[in-house]
Image (tube, rainbow, N blue to C red; front, side):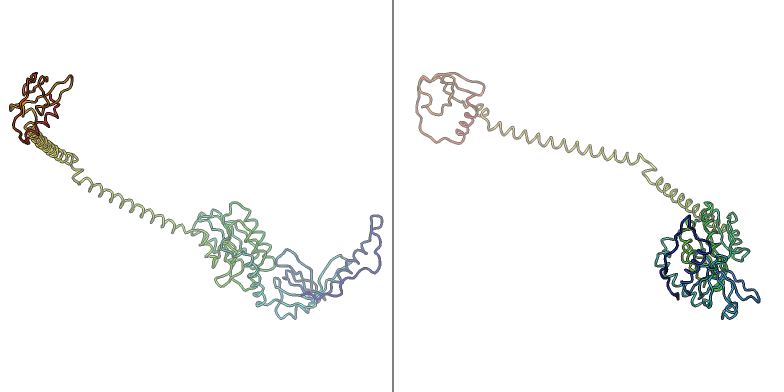
Length: 444
């Protein structure tokens, strides 16, 4: 919130011409800057104290107020009593809200904020601010699990950002070396609390992220209060973690501690020891796993060979493989039996059909015209030129007709000398059959 004084107004009169021939002197520029800044009035400013200089007996205390999310700072002056009367002791790293007026010192050309009120930011307010930032980052999708990068199974080089000679550094290095002695570390010692923590961590993170040999980065420190862990909830640090191309493991504090870096990191470890276990595999456990897999593979192979051996033995013991020609011989005997049976059936069929054919031939012979002629009958035909007509009545052969008489063994040529009628009688079946035979034979 800002309380502003009178707003700048237009110049009362026209400003003197300014050019290379008519430049403004330094005092004019300094006075104009001072006058413009005076018009800003008093304002409220939030920041983090990075430096306090309050000498005993001095009438003015000097502070440096820094923006936690940007590398920018502002000189602040105040009455030393403001620092002594603060309900919470102020020290470097404290978050405060100050109220004052900007002042430009024309003699030195410097700018400072003269404050008349300092309010320390309490834990509750810090947590509320962190929650607001958390909601903002979540709305931007920085906590999305799809952005999490997988950790390599066995990294060759691990980047480590932690405090100098800290217990967290010792835990990570010791546990990782015990689990996988061949692992290498690129350690960057930085401040892990206070006003300089965020810039140093950002520089170390950028340096390790640019190193192609570093395959994973561990950001860790021990536990602490909300104020101590405040740098790991800094917005600039959270965005840098998301923008990094190297997978990052966050191991800040202990299980209950949840700075915002835990949410944007690719993996959150409960403790520095847990981070070391997550980053590198256990050599002993991996070797035991390899031995177990080899044993299981060997057992599976032996089992497969045994099964296949039994299957081959069963196949070899079968009659078809024990005596392969046995089945061929059995089939050959069966084929021979079938062949003999087929021949016998064919011969029987031929004999049966031959007998039937003979009987039919005998029947045809018995009723044929040749048999009738052999019994003394004859077929008489009248020959008229090239035509022949069977004589069935005396009227068909008048006297003088040329006749052809066919008997069993040949034919006789004769002439009709005359005709004599006999008593009428009905033709019997034999005569009718004889006539039909004559007609079929055509008189031959």
